[in-house]
Image 1 (tube, rainbow, N blue to C red):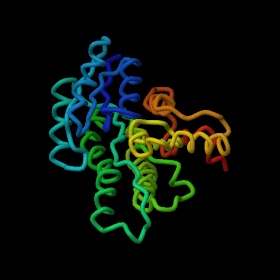
Image 2: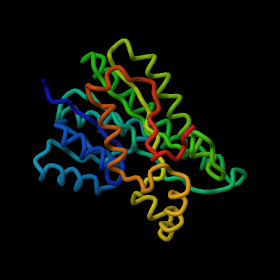
Image 3: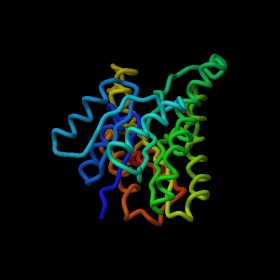
Image 4: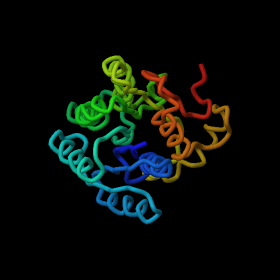
Length: 249
């Protein structure tokens, strides 16, 4: 079987890099995309471990940038079979009345519109192959809503709606589209946002989660890798919650 090509956005760290690593270990050729120049080093890190990988600097919120980095991926590895739309802005807590139209637009562009742009840029490759996997990162905050996150939660809810609708559009071509909603996952972005918040979040997790530990980026990456595999060929339009039993309903 030809080695499949995967594109992972927001792959310089956290869930994105964990996903890229997991897919590389599974034998895929992996392109890591991020606005941060550190994505180059992360690609080299996977290469040094014997994997087929490349880090490419790109902005998922700008259409021309998306076209450019997808072209680089094709030149390096060939047609794209897998897309993981992980890039996004970290949640910023602010009262909904204080959110400016500019802030709203920025969150929607980076966290939701980017999924549309990247999916549109790769779908012809998948249609030609009669095989494809698209996974979009959502959040458990969408399931119940969360105060002071109106822009972030709205975008993450949109990611699920986009996944379900696109799944119906492309299913006849053996392309699956799913969302993954992480719960309380300890990542670099969370640590930067709440450097002193580990004790608080641990207490919260112990109270509300069924599984009594913090989730990791690798937990989420494992779920994403499953949805990208042949084993998930009959699963589409779904939202896979990875939260240790936080949002049980």
